[in-house]
Amino acid sequence: MSLSSRRWALALLCMSTPYERNEVLAFTTGIPPCQSTQVNVATRTCSSTSRRRRSLHHIRKLAADNTDGSTNKTTGDTLRASTGIRPSLHPITINCVAEALLLRSRSRLGKKQENGDPITIDTSDSSVEALQVAITAGGIAVNAIDQRNKSADADGDGENAVLDTSEQQTVSGRVVGVVMRLPELESLLVDKVKGVGWVSKYGEEESFGLLRSEVKDSEGDSGQLAEQLQLNPLLRMNRAECLLALFIDTVEKPQLERIGQRVPDSSRVDFIDADRLEVLVAED
Image (cartoon, rainbow, N blue to C red; front, side, top):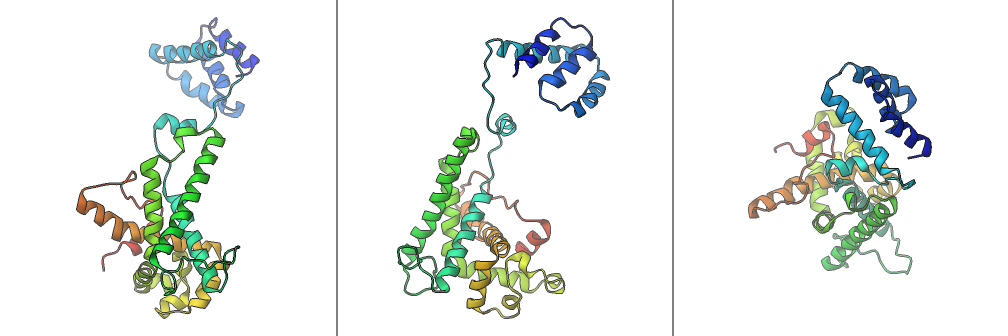
């Protein structure tokens, strides 16, 4: 808090009317001037003693906390910290799956890693062992988690945004689980979308991360698909979202229920809009 703000807070202790106290409260808590009038009008309508005492207590605390002249500012997401709500695991997981789809596309188009080694991410490639695919997928997840936690520390969010052990395990497990089942999940995705009239009628295949040719012909053109997934980030992201949703709904949730366990976010699929979710989780 600046020196002028501290003076406003200290001056409040000498004020007596509710209007004056609320006006200073609006100023010292950082509410823009254009909103101060609204706050004053709203708070003036409530003249209860308890409300005035809470306001006065709040400003006294602000004054006490800043009498040492400290200029330290609170960093990070203070709202999240106050609610205790943990950050969603879905964005980082979806990004990892999208990266895996990109790497698979590059592999199918004949590209290799910078060191000349093949990209071992395609389970349908008979020359690639399943263990190699799992290691590659796990590496994608670990790198993303490390980057996420470093960014959280740099932003000052600390424990509010840094993924804990169980959250890291959940993200890694989902990324590896989806990548190891890509052919099966993609086939299921096509089957889910194929029977929905409004998708083909309005040309919404891309919103599911699919090409129209995939829906018309279950086999599709793997070369064309690889090319489009490499060039179109939105197509890639939509596909990653749908594949993750199918994995959670058809693999993760049933298996966890069977053994009586749960993951930090309780396997909620809350990252897909209602129209797509209805298609993906519809009973066959």
